[in-house]
Every structure is written in structure tokens, then in C-alpha cells.
Length: 141
Image (cartoon, rainbow, N blue to C red; front, side, top):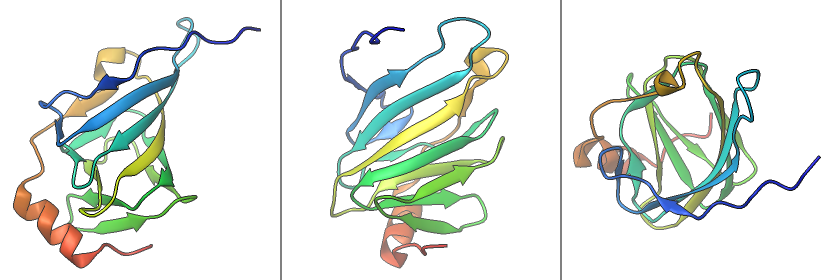
């Protein structure tokens, strides 16, 4: 066993995120027999992902702030610290910090057979989509 090397915090790219979002890698596969990826992701108030999906689904465990998660059917779910949201494989969604608070979550997912296909990035969430979601405040389903 060993202590994993610490990697520098990186800022997520504007092609996939709106606003300031930082990533700290916690765990990545050591070889082809492993698939788990775990990261801590921090969002500035109002920051959000673009629409995307994951080949094998994703767990997001909120550790700070108030998170908003949106789906293509217009559903928005508010997730609070200590709660975990699961997104099934292939489901298009986005996640964001509420407009008035930073938000942090731990993301847990498995790489696809082709790691380049683990996450499929799509178009940005429009300001209108985000405003509509943040005005509604989401629901705590």
C-alpha cells in the first residue's frame, strides 16, 4: 500500500464549464483492471457544467453549499451537504452551485472501456435554463 501522490488543483476548462470550477483528483485507475475515478470539485456561486452524460453513470456527494442538478426533462433537484445524487449511465444532465453560495461535491464514476468516452460533453446550459432552475430552487427529491 502507499499514499497516492498529490496532484495540483486544476481549473476546469470553459468549453465544459461556465464560471469558476476547480478540480482536485482523489483517485484514478492504476491499471486496466481498475475503472474508479474520484475527484473533489468546487464551484463558485452560479458556476455550472455544460450538459453531459457518463458511460457508466456517476455519484455526486455534496459536501458544502447548495447544489442544483438538472435533467433534460426540466427536472431540477436541489442537493444539500451529506446527500448523494446518482445519475444513471447515458442520462444527460448538468450540475451547478446555487447563485448565492460556493458548492463542493465528490464525484465518483467509472471509466468506460475507452476512457475517452467516459464523459460525453454537450452544449452549455443556457443562462435562461440556469436562471429558471435557480429561481425554482430545485426540489429535494
